[in-house]
Length: 315
Image (cartoon, rainbow, N blue to C red; front, side, top):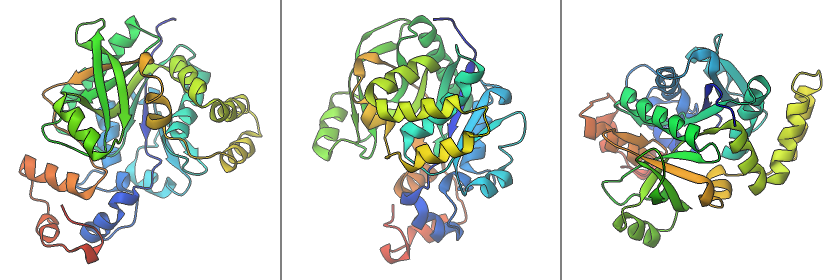
C-alpha cells in the first residue's frame, strides 16, 4: 500500500446528551457540548481543531457534524476554507460518523492515512499528544494493515470507557498488538482490567483510510454498502437525495463495539505517556479535570453545591 498524506477527521456530530444537564446548569445553554466553552473562551471543538492543526494542515482536515449544527459551526469558525465540512442528515453513532468523512477523503486521496479525533476531549499537553499521533502514523506506515489506537494508562478505576489489553511488541518499539478490546465493560470487568494494567481507549485512531474502510466493511457490510452508494453519488446532483435516503434507512452503529471489539487482530496500540487526557463525556470528569489542573472557572463553586434536581447528578 502506498503511503499517502495524513488527513484529520474531527467527529463533531454527537448531541452530547450526558452533558446537557450539566451545561444547562453552568452555562444556561442546550447546545451540544462540543460547541461549548467549558474552560476559557474557546469551545471544545475549537480546541480540537487547533490541536489537530499542530500536525495536519487545515486543507486536509475534515469535520463531520449533524444537521442542525451549522449555526454553531459558523459561530466557531471551524468551517472556513480551506477546511472541509461534511454534514450528516442525522446522528447514527460513530461508525457512520467516521464513514462519511472517509468517503469524502478517499475520493480525493485514495492512498490517504487518517487520524480520527473526537471533539469532546481535554488534553493539557497538546503538542506532546500530537507527537504521539505522529508516532501512530509512523507505525501505520510500517504496518498498513493495522488500525493504531492511542491508549492511556488510568491512575484509578474508571467506568464508561473502552479498554485495551496490549499484546506482543510490534514495530516500532512501543507499538503493541492488541489481545482484546472491550467497549464499556461492566464494573467487575473494569476492576480486573485495571489490575491487569490494561489501557483506556482515547478513541484517537490512526490508519490507512482504505484499511479503515475495509475492516469496517467486514464487520458492518450493510452499513458500508450504503456509504458506497453515497460515494458513487458524491459529485452528482443526486448526492443529497442519496445521502438522506441512506441515513433514513440506516440503524445506528457504534464503531468501538461493532468494529474494534470484533477485530482485535487488526489493531495496534501505543501507550500515550506524560499527557493529561480526559474524555469529557460526563460531568464528573469535567469537574475532576478542572480541580486537577487548579482552574477556577466561574461555575465551579455552583457545581460544588449542586443537587440532582438541578439537572445533573454532581461530581
